[in-house]
Image (tube, rainbow, N blue to C red; front, top):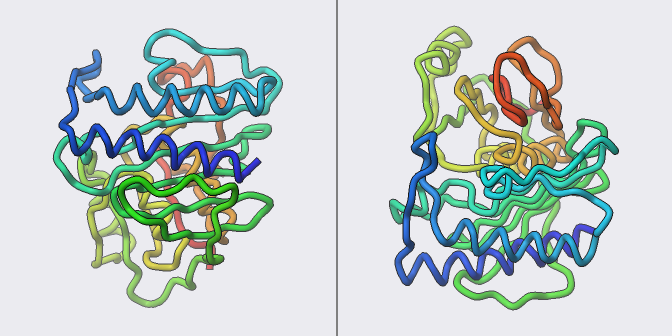
Length: 262
């Protein structure tokens, strides 16, 4: 399965970069978040690939949900897709945007791919193993398998490095860093924050502002496979497939803290 997800993410990333270099057409959703033709193009590619390879596994995809298309996920196994995470990064010509495909089983992210096409890096995880592959930027070939090196979270030392959202930071996040005595932090866009912790380049990602499940599933799967964890503010593992929530919409996440377990 992971080979198919990786290949689909790379194909979507190629389409995204074509539009990135040509100049995207930007519109805005009801919540004022931007969406581009690259979001839609990438999602079409991924949905077609998943339907062909896994016709019995439903897919919750960001733009499809925005259009009102929400399949039944009662079976507990489904994909979460964010075809272009970090659309603001994309529009602002920052390279920290990603393609995210995550597989959920009984509320737990068990496999995922995060591809950053402008950086030429692909992170993936499955069967409890996480890896990073370096690809050529632009239009890499679509190999049947993507070779990569195993990655692992590092032990958290006396001076941990926190990653925070570039566009959606909050006073609560900064208060958390102060309360925990964390002096060093860096603002990073998209799901790359999970991957950098999984790779051992940072230690913690507190997110005390709104996210959706498709924003986090793939990166969370990679982090967990690399020896990390993602917990709610109450200390419970972040779960997926949340519907009928009293306090928020379907598939919305609560505040969370992603970190190395070490």
